[in-house]
Image (cartoon, rainbow, N blue to C red):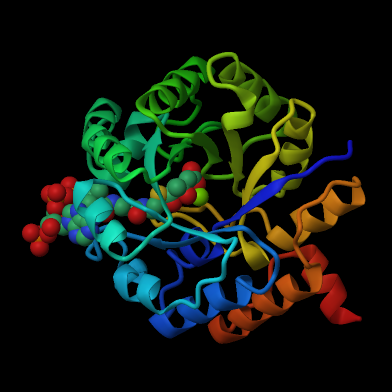
Length: 296
Ligand code: HMG
Ligand code: MG
């Protein structure tokens, strides 16, 4: 294997949305530190209801105050038109709609059924088309759901295909609770790749059971080259109890570089960013690579 992988750094959004005491200043500082690492896509904010996720409040202020670097796309979650309009006014370079392959999770996370969510995304897609703004689409619970349990692979492929047909340029396949294992992850991605081009698929694996890196490795075989991760392995979804952090970006970068693949990311700078936010939050980085290098 010898080619490029683009990492979508979701630490400032997925990583911090579950942190009870995170401040706006800390969120801005993390985005700025990550902007110095060579990353090209940082999911910086979430234009969701602050009553639902108070940690992500003031996304407009965050987008206004971060120090933007050329060559980096700063994106944000937008569950509906209200969120989309604020994201556009705040100069988001890109937005993401987020649906699920599980009815139970869709209800709990965005308060509507899967069908209702897809209908709600239509006006967002139309507005984004008019503004020529790229939209990513997430599918949560692709390898299991905290409420509904097992999820059938065709359901994942259905939702992924609908989002792609609606105009999402990329579909990020989320193992929201981190229960997947490599063969299962590979089978899921292979099935989705029959309906959506593999070049338009990204992996978004949480690491609750310690399987995220192995799951990524299995799916690299299928040709996927776009991977979401969070610095220091921060993260979790407020509506997926028991789910722990995302795959740690440091561990992902270390493995990809070890495979001879290029990410453009400077591991040392990444570790500095992760260590800084962890000190602020008074917790240890979850990345094994960061732990090993910091212990030297
Ligand atoms: P709702 O209560 O059904 O919405 O929530 P509503 O339209 O009835 O509005 C209720 C109130 O929210 C109103 O305010 C609206 O104005 C306000 P009020 O009149 O009561 O004062 N509101 C908003 N405010 C700010 N921004 C908005 C917005 N929309 C409505 N965009 C809604 C529906 C979708 C808004 C809500 O359920 C929500 O915000 N959910 C977000 C949950 C969330 O952020 N979850 C975490 C992200 S997803 C994730 O982590 C998974 C992922 O990482 C992939 C993976 O791991 O699988 C992406
Ligand atoms: Mg997630």
